[in-house]
Each structure stands twice: as structure tokens, then as C-alpha cells.
Length: 60
Image 1 (spheres, rainbow, N blue to C red):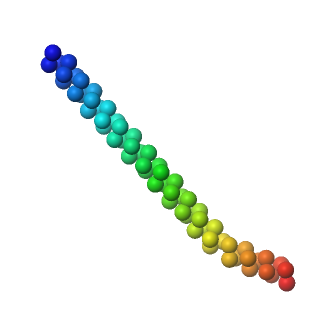
Image 2 (tube, rainbow, N blue to C red):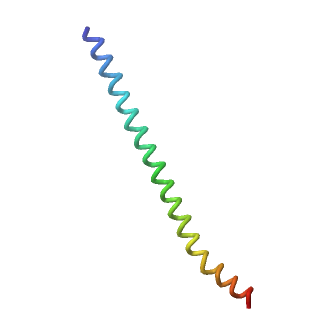
């Protein structure tokens, strides 16, 4: 009977560790995606004034 309880506790512990690791990896991926999205937005914002200047030069 004790071996069953110990074995169950070991499995429960492994499951909890796996769930926490999975959650951390998922959060890290979401964080990396948000950083990438913000960097892309910043690059687009930096590129826009130059493009507008080129359009003005082409019109003149």
C-alpha cells in the first residue's frame, strides 16, 4: 500500500513539474513574439518618414 502512495506522489510531482515547465516555455514564446511585434512596429515607424520624403522628392 505504501509503494502505491509513493509511486502516485512521484507521478504527481513529475506532472506538476512538467506543467510548470510547459507554462514557462509558453509564456517565454508569447513574450518573444510581443518583443518581435514591437520591434517591427518601431522599424515601420522609423521607415515611414524617409518614405514620405522620397515621395515628396518624386513629386517635385
